[in-house]
Image 1: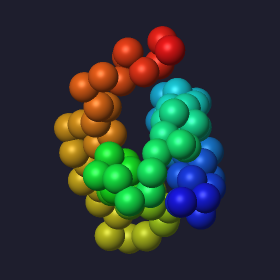
Image 2 (image 1 turned 30 degrees about the horizontal axis):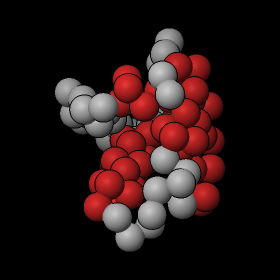
Image 3 (image 1 turned 180 degrees about the vertical axis):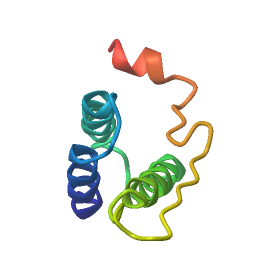
Image 4 (image 1 turned 45 degrees about the horizontal axis):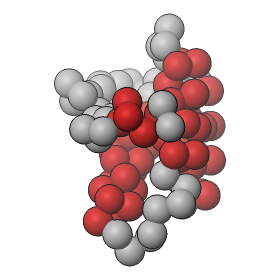
Length: 90
Protein backbone atom coordinates (compact mmCIF):
# COMPACT_ATOMS: atom_id res chain seq x y z
CA UNK A 1 0.00 0.00 0.00
CA UNK A 2 2.89 2.34 0.66
CA UNK A 3 4.02 1.89 -2.94
CA UNK A 4 0.67 2.90 -4.43
CA UNK A 5 0.46 5.83 -1.98
CA UNK A 6 3.83 7.15 -3.15
CA UNK A 7 2.93 6.61 -6.80
CA UNK A 8 -0.33 8.52 -6.37
CA UNK A 9 1.43 11.43 -4.66
CA UNK A 10 4.10 11.59 -7.38
CA UNK A 11 1.45 11.45 -10.08
CA UNK A 12 -0.58 14.21 -8.44
CA UNK A 13 2.44 16.53 -8.45
CA UNK A 14 2.43 16.64 -12.25
CA UNK A 15 -1.30 16.16 -12.83
CA UNK A 16 -2.42 18.85 -15.31
CA UNK A 17 -5.22 20.44 -13.32
CA UNK A 18 -5.85 23.64 -11.42
CA UNK A 19 -7.09 21.37 -8.60
CA UNK A 20 -3.75 19.54 -8.34
CA UNK A 21 -3.13 20.61 -4.73
CA UNK A 22 -6.64 19.60 -3.63
CA UNK A 23 -6.22 16.19 -5.26
CA UNK A 24 -2.81 15.75 -3.61
CA UNK A 25 -4.21 16.69 -0.19
CA UNK A 26 -7.23 14.42 -0.71
CA UNK A 27 -4.98 11.43 -1.44
CA UNK A 28 -2.98 12.10 1.74
CA UNK A 29 -6.13 12.55 3.82
CA UNK A 30 -7.80 9.41 2.49
CA UNK A 31 -4.75 7.28 3.22
CA UNK A 32 -4.50 8.74 6.74
CA UNK A 33 -8.18 8.07 7.41
CA UNK A 34 -7.88 4.46 6.29
CA UNK A 35 -4.47 3.58 7.74
CA UNK A 36 -5.98 1.50 10.56
CA UNK A 37 -8.27 -0.60 8.38
CA UNK A 38 -7.91 -4.35 8.62
CA UNK A 39 -6.21 -5.33 5.31
CA UNK A 40 -8.52 -8.32 4.91
CA UNK A 41 -11.72 -6.29 5.40
CA UNK A 42 -14.09 -5.55 2.54
CA UNK A 43 -13.74 -1.80 3.05
CA UNK A 44 -9.94 -2.02 2.77
CA UNK A 45 -10.23 -4.00 -0.45
CA UNK A 46 -12.65 -1.40 -1.83
CA UNK A 47 -10.28 1.45 -0.92
CA UNK A 48 -7.37 -0.35 -2.61
CA UNK A 49 -9.45 -0.74 -5.78
CA UNK A 50 -10.27 2.97 -5.73
CA UNK A 51 -6.58 3.80 -5.26
CA UNK A 52 -5.56 1.63 -8.23
CA UNK A 53 -8.29 3.19 -10.37
CA UNK A 54 -7.05 6.66 -9.44
CA UNK A 55 -3.48 5.67 -10.20
CA UNK A 56 -4.42 4.41 -13.64
CA UNK A 57 -6.19 7.70 -14.34
CA UNK A 58 -3.20 9.73 -13.17
CA UNK A 59 -0.92 7.63 -15.39
CA UNK A 60 -2.99 8.60 -18.43
CA UNK A 61 -1.22 11.96 -18.25
CA UNK A 62 2.32 10.59 -17.85
CA UNK A 63 3.20 10.55 -21.54
CA UNK A 64 1.51 13.65 -22.91
CA UNK A 65 4.04 14.01 -25.72
CA UNK A 66 2.82 10.80 -27.36
CA UNK A 67 1.24 11.23 -30.78
CA UNK A 68 -1.86 9.20 -29.86
CA UNK A 69 -2.67 11.12 -26.69
CA UNK A 70 -6.19 10.51 -25.40
CA UNK A 71 -7.76 10.49 -21.98
CA UNK A 72 -10.99 8.98 -20.74
CA UNK A 73 -12.11 9.75 -17.20
CA UNK A 74 -15.10 8.66 -15.22
CA UNK A 75 -17.60 11.18 -13.95
CA UNK A 76 -16.68 10.44 -10.31
CA UNK A 77 -13.29 8.68 -10.30
CA UNK A 78 -12.76 8.86 -6.54
CA UNK A 79 -16.13 8.13 -4.92
CA UNK A 80 -16.31 8.95 -1.25
CA UNK A 81 -17.96 6.52 1.18
CA UNK A 82 -21.43 7.40 2.43
CA UNK A 83 -20.14 8.34 5.88
CA UNK A 84 -17.10 10.29 4.61
CA UNK A 85 -18.05 13.65 6.13
CA UNK A 86 -18.87 12.02 9.48
CA UNK A 87 -15.44 10.32 9.60
CA UNK A 88 -13.63 13.59 8.81
CA UNK A 89 -15.19 15.44 11.74
CA UNK A 90 -14.12 12.86 14.33
